[in-house]
Image (tube, rainbow, N blue to C red; front, side, top):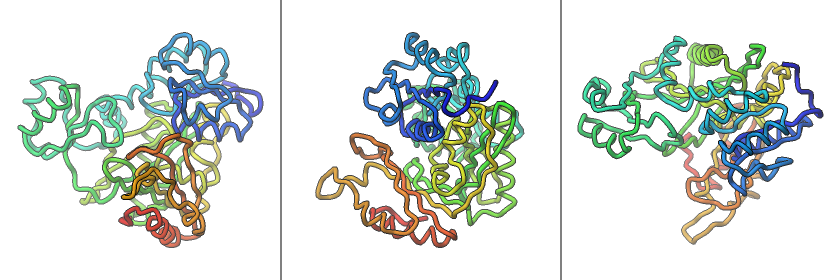
Amino acid sequence: MSALLPGTATLGVLGGGQLGRMFVHAAQALGYRCIVLDPDAISPAGAVAEQHIRTDYLDSFGLAQLARDCDAITTEFENVPALALETLAGMRVVAPSGASVAVCQDRAVEKAHFEAAGVPCAPHAVITNDIELAAVDPALLPGILKTSRMGYDGKGQVRVSTAAELAAAWDDLKRVPCVLEQLLPLKAELSVLVARGADGQLVNYPVQQNLHRGGILAVTEVPARAVPADVQQQAVAAARQVAQALGYVGVLCIEFFWLEDGRLVVNEMAPRPHNSGHWTMNGANASQFELQVRALAGLPLPELRQHSASLMLNLLGDLWFSDEGGPTPPAWDRVLVLPGTHLHLYGKAEARHGRKMGHLNITADTPDAAHAVAVQAAAVLGLPADF
């Protein structure tokens, strides 16, 4: 397609969450108008876009209006119905494609794609019926039973150690299609963000080292100081391979497990900008959201450069609550006095436990300096300093 030049086009977003909000900000900085389609009357992205279409993602009238008023359309989260993207693709440029998103929506299909692309993933078994449950290899236990669809941030996941626990867990998950993954001894969790244009141009950020708490990303550090160069090169090559095999257009995050025995296996992927890439807003020459805008609009992708050592702290709604009650805003003044701190709040009206409210980026000349400030910020916020 011909490039949609800044200042001349309108970009659409399916989804009104914080990722959509940051996409809209990046698009507006380049001169694009934005329209968000989201059923929630109060959404972070809808609050900052030029227009908010408040309909369900499969509402034919809403999709027709979005297609009529936009020149190109993307999604801000992977659980938007792939059918909505496929419907829109018949009328407008859509990236990523419905087919790509559909792969990421189903763990079993996703793992089959990894294997077809020649990228190793954890030993696993697909469970959709009693026969497959009975046929599970005992070597996969202990393991983690994950729903094939709609699982994120640790939801829809149960650790199991025996065949009896596996059967009980599958019952508890309402016997929906699941994937049992062998529990592997981890040294670290890593991710790689790639962006691919419709012309096949492919760029990537450095490997990101991640720490999760309760299944939710808590900390990302770049560069990944503890990870040897050869492991990082392997992760980057695998991520690019996955994106190429999908014929993907847009920003794609691939998550990896780096194992105690030195092996690297792919965990899952997200067809969108990702929490672990939030550091790019302050630590790189172009953010992941600008890359998504460029890929969608058919603009050239820049050669990426990390200009500052970076560390990202995820900010959940728990920080707004204390033993004395709540909600009360954290002491941002005591945080922002620290050198190299950059606060990003998502404009959510209500703080709730476990709700993603924002993130704090820390940039510095060296990884050690960024880490030292992050420890100070964590102390002010009452976060663990286990990174």
